[in-house]
Amino acid sequence: MSTTVNAGARLDRLPVSPFHYRIFWLVGAGMFFDGYDLYVASSVLAATIQTKFSTLPQNLQFISLTFVGMTLGALITGFLGDRYGRRFTYQVNLLIFGLASLAAAFAQDMGQLIACRFVQGLGLGAEIVVGYSTLTEFVPPRTRGRWLAFMAFLVVAGFPVTAILGYLIIPTFGWGRCSSSPASARSSCGICARTCRNRRGGSSRRAEPRRPRR
Image (cartoon, rainbow, N blue to C red; front, top):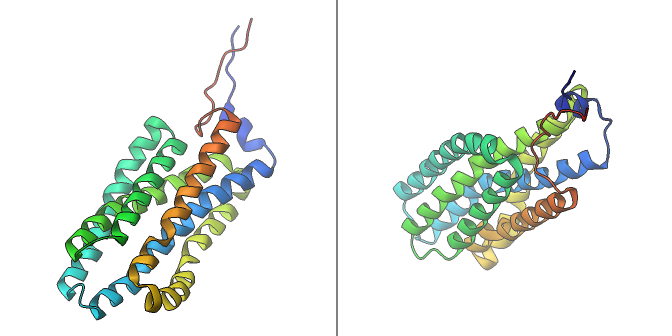
């Protein structure tokens, strides 16, 4: 008589190990820069108004399209994550967001910056879905609330970092440097996630139950 192995239940019973911490910091780094880029808009928009790069109506469009992109990104990524796996979706999200951030730093006018911000919004919304869902899949249920609380802390920690870097960078180097600064760091997170995948030799999705040999 054949039986199946409940892989999900076995993962839930595993004790906390360095693997869990590695997953947390890889995903948490991306979530931190997600919060950073969401909060940095306030510093960037203030600088664009002061330098006459934008007008108040354009800044309102900038904010609106950011949240439109986040809504679409969160919706689409939920389906893509179920279809192709969380880690693959996470890496594609970092690639899209990183390229959009670099392009935003070289925007020639506010229209180009708004377009880049919409694409960034897709990545921001996707990161929220992928980050929390990936962590939930791996951490044990008995401590899951604690892990998610620390993850949320990393997201909001981007606010004071944004304020400090905006104060130091924007007066000297301009708002472009402050806006694009998380791009390279996010790319590093994607490379680390890829390396982690190669070492483990699989995807982030839970293993499918398989029948034992007779």
